[in-house]
Image (cartoon, rainbow, N blue to C red; front, top):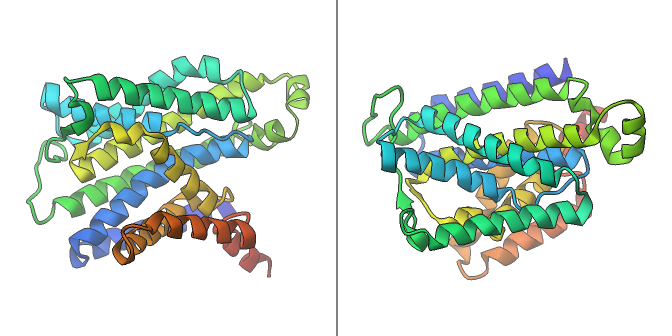
Length: 311
């Protein structure tokens, strides 16, 4: 009942955002859509964090999803954003399935640094690839939905609607996964892997599954971000991008599958305001915010809702 209520609240909030879309300025629609895209990536990190794993290279699959969306338009003329998001998820999941056989063997800092190294390898390949625009990147075809191209004044709202729908479906599926026996093993894996193995469950396989699901979510987020911005470049796989996703996940907390979207929205607001007020020192503002959060709310923003319910 608790999880169903949380998902219901998320659905109501997304419907409210979608309904208010025509009344919101373009910059607000852009901010909401990017928050949804980054929230999907953070949701993948949440799955790994619950098992005690921290990926410093989640931008790898964010970038793969974005370049899949861009490549479909550049080489095949496909600009349908739903096709791009599904393709981004499938390509990212396929790559994660292959790399997962390696990463599932490692834990702790080795897991984090290896994921970071893989992300930076992709960055290096993209920088050297002239066919994909090198450091300049490439433009993404104007968005279409089911082959219909919305008008210039409504395109951001249409992208937001599609992003909200896909995010809600993805969140629903993630929640269903967490309610399965395999999904509920995360806490046990984090506490004691040996006991999990004694139960007859392969820890490597469980981590491998989480890694693939997290990659698929990141691929969707990358494709949505590419469609929203209209341009992609190698910086989407750079280590600073992965750092943003970790920031969002820590900011949100791991108490709910809805928390990453809250964290992404708060991150976007802090980033926008800080950059507007002081373009040269906005990183210091973000760092200060994270420091205060760790000191006063070590379990993230979602702990506020948990404390309120407990009170």
